[in-house]
Image 1 (spheres, rainbow, N blue to C red):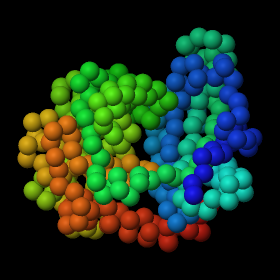
Image 2 (image 1 turned 90 degrees about the vertical axis):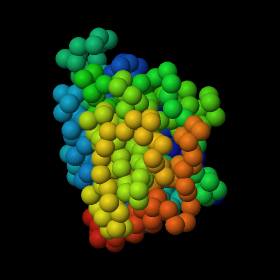
Image 3 (image 1 turned 60 degrees about the vertical axis):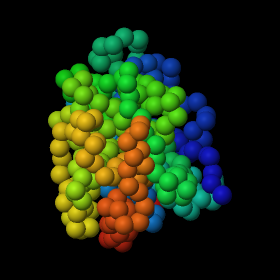
Length: 305
């Protein structure tokens, strides 16, 4: 039986997440002036700790924001939050861990000089996976017809910020049409990613994923699949610029995310894909599970919670 409780840690103070803790003057609330990262555990070990931390630092630097925590201090606060969550709920399964940094509060106004100092919030909850039947059946996706990915020259999708309206509106459009997730294209019509996941395809037995130059988040799971997991599974993997018409030559599709690793996709609109046993996607998912298990075995002493 799962738990819906979410444990929060606001600037070191532990409390239920439903309890108010952020000032109405916080710039994360007022302007989305924030960065964040999400980790999950495998076998009680925080997965890909360094990769996510490096991306958090890069996002903060892009926003000219000073982090209020070092990596060791952040890990300490995460462990405190996890312990409180486990004590409150008795949950001993896998966890979702979110660390959000805002520029802080201060007088109302866009000028970043008004901020009085960065704040942090850690959130810990059960890592909820897709129901087995949904994973077996595969997800149904729809193209976003009215929303496009914001260009890299504006608010770069490579920055993992607190401003997610582009994704929110694109997902809303797809959900209104009965889909599980959305596929977003950029202004040139190139495929970028889903609302909260990177996307990948299989063509001719090889894995391809949209190139970062198209404007998308440099996902940690995506990066590990390209550099580590696919080679171990004996599958060639590369980046390409992909257009909608290229789906005619694609056999499989999948999503890549921190919380759900490799998730098979059954269809994008009327285009259907192969799913199930014997597919490259199923081999990739199995290889990712083996990779995560090995990581947990190696890093248990350093990153166990």
